[in-house]
Amino acid sequence: MTPCGSCLPILSLIRRRSIPRCSACPGVEFRRWTDCAPDTDYDLLVTWAFPPDMAKLPASTRAVLCLGAGTDQLPSDPRLPDDMPVVRLRDPAQAQQILDYAMHAAFARQQDDFSVRRSQRARRWQRAVSEIRDRGALSVAVLGLGMIGGHVASGLAGAGFRVSGWSRTPRERVGVTAFHGEGGLVPAVTGADLLVNLLPSNQHTRGILDGRLFGLLAPGAYVVNLGRGDHLDETALRQALDSGHVAGAWLDVFLQEPLPADHWAWAHESVRITPHCGGLPTPEGTAAAIAEAIKALDDPRNPLVSGKPLLDSQNS
Image (cartoon, rainbow, N blue to C red):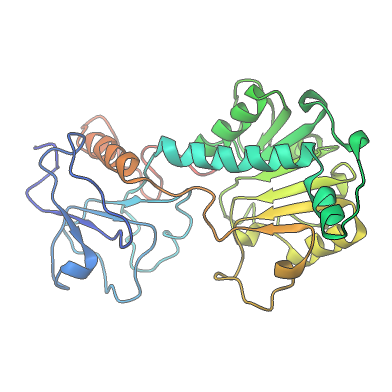
């Protein structure tokens, strides 16, 4: 078997970004969805989600390689066969982008950024030195300790923040006080000054960012949602912000995207909105990740487990 698996082409559905032809993927032919006839056969499918005009996967498809930070949008699609392997591509640059986003929010919390901005808008020269604390005195709780969540948690700990982490199953990360399971969620987040969500979306995690959870945070905490829009109870967050218990929110994902122009979060003085760009796949990283996935798929020792990623699990 050749490094590209077979003589069939790989079909790439990346529309706005190109994957470079590089030494990481020798002999691999990439084709865009828009350049292919409906009956085109291909070996692997590279996508984030299936386009609406795609009828079904051809029988030649060996696996779906998923871009993005999660695969939860794919298993529910009826066009995905039950026995089709789904591989989440590992792009270290994407994980680093998400860490940078979380780090930015952590420093904003340390400097009480939303209060400073309110004073600036009011043209009020007011110092809040008492709110600026040493990093080691700030408690950060990270929900989700998978590949990306673990990288973020360890990165924040390495920067000097006091970090706890929670996952559904036991995971250990350098510098992180780890909790797991239903009984571990409360101690993981209680008293946190910053809450960073990087969980996958599933029946166990939808709606997890609710009023009860916000009430466990330290007064003046910031909430960062880099997971999925359906994790967040938006009404509960608005109430927590308006009460002042939660002092700020950094929101990269929403239940409805693009976010409607009349959504309350646009105008809220304690909310920072980013358009689902906390971590984007890079061409070079994607090419290397595809090469890694091909190697794994061609390894006879690697079992193809139906419905589960071959290279990394999002069930954190």
